[in-house]
Length: 494
Image (cartoon, rainbow, N blue to C red; front, side, top):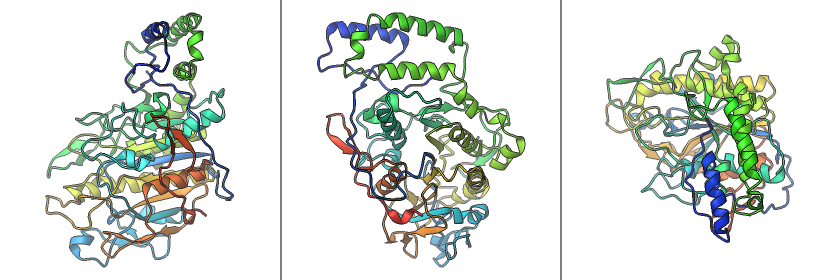
């Protein structure tokens, strides 16, 4: 089933009562014609740079909850014990740049990476929308909402939108904007978390989400000391699968039923062609064809079928949800995908992903760091060996970092901290074997070269051949730049 988020809105600006009757009839087919404006992107001239457009595709790896910089990409071996913590530092393939001791495989592939150790912004909240969109500020009193069409669009949605504008008649075999393994917060006792959605570009540019409903095979430490829970990011069964939208059920449309629906749609088109030309519903045709193609084509489903890979390759990535999501992402790119996102998400309310306010060291030692160190380096090596890394940008990001000072909760813990944290990049156009920026001696503030999430977005757009000054209209029709106030950092490039 195709999952489309968003609430119907009342059309205005000249839509007649007859038009509304047409729209009411279309709702019988489950199609939301919410806000398909004919948006225009104001392109500036192409920058004169050898790095511009080097990336033909992008894989975003997002660690929900925020990993600690001290135990990952920016350890402080000379800091006091209350700062350094239980884990020490080891050398990496980048001379003079240590990483956390539980990342030995990551240390070996660091020479393929640019590690940024001076990320900074003012919002120490789980604001995925701030990390992945040009939005200038967030409201800390409310989480972002997937249905909020006043939000700024996610980078993957912008890429999809602009490619569609360049080639309005193209119907790619693989959707341009795919996200794994399930919508953020889909498996917690909470509503879905916003951020990786199209916002005011319209729901037709939301990512196409997969679903994954297996419970996991390994019990991991959770936030309460001594308790545990099965988490698929720690282990899954070899036959556990990704599906499009939600898990198939008795009511899921068969190809025959889809054909019937298409026949009905084609008959209905005769009564509504006058509406197709209306600027408020210009995206109807694209949505209809996309929905049918996804239900009837095996291309994306085959790319997501990691069971087609050799067992040795699957084990190389790790038989866990993170590793198999990375493997699926590689397969989607190999099949012609443009932008694929992998979210290492919170699986239950008491596990909390990378948000280690308590039981910090048991979770890092027994689960988070070993899984990341197994799967991410294997993914990067495989991308490189297949020649995919030359044209694919890889972004490994999160929304903030964690406090330099450890708290006194059971198992230790670090709180939210956005004044300085670390991310890493690789692939097309990115420099190899370099660390950009520095934090101070306790990893609490930027020492040199502050870089914001908007700067990362601007630099990513640049590599993808999109001038970051490109604008899209907000809900009031005002032009806003796709990367907000972000600037391109050419020192990130190779």
